[in-house]
Image (tube, rainbow, N blue to C red; front, side):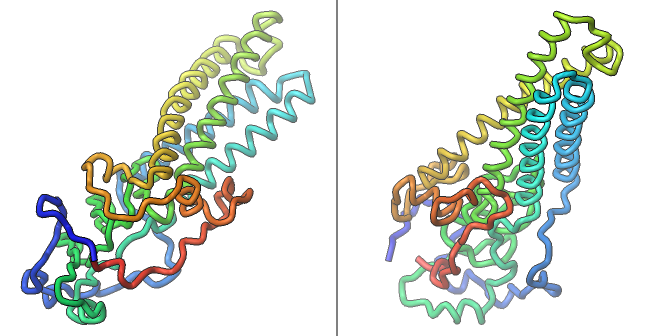
Length: 299
């Protein structure tokens, strides 16, 4: 059994009388199994729509400004296929990150019956969240936007309108990776297109007028550069968080490590699945998270 220091800042209820399980009743209409997870947050929904709009804008400029008017058929086909594949995987990863339960703890499970089912021994401690009235597993944190406790919560991301947690971190990492790749690809194509237009007549290098072409390309260049930097940093921080097995919240709060240390490779497999395969790069492959441990609520 692990001891918890007195200075550990969490919603810990050490005495049974403070748990007040009689005040915690299950939600009147629990979410049926298999129901799609979706957070009804106005800011998050707006950010998700903006994300899709920006990707589709890049798609429009790449296809109708640069590739389709090009007289190099091989160049257009190869770059079109690569860009569209990456864009499709990015949007698919975004959907999976947004619509996957990140690891929400059952709401209102701090009931007398549930606590008795844990068969607590003398000296054992449970964590209780006073906001959603649930018994927290270790390393779970409450999200004020999702209004739930999330297992291994890293942060709440408005761009995917969801928390990044135990069950959807893989999809968030893939989303940042594919957005960074299409941003880099778009920037390279914009550079080549500008060179091509400078060497030839601007009226022949695009189906739009020269001023419109320049404006569209500059906007795409600005968008690509901004998102390349942002998503590359997010991708790096997420991979570092996975390798060190320490979430963003745990790093921010400098929480004392109370879990077993594993190798970086084992931590990667815990998030992306076992064994290593092409499924790691696919947003359609669901990693095996294993069965829930009934004693994860107890220390």
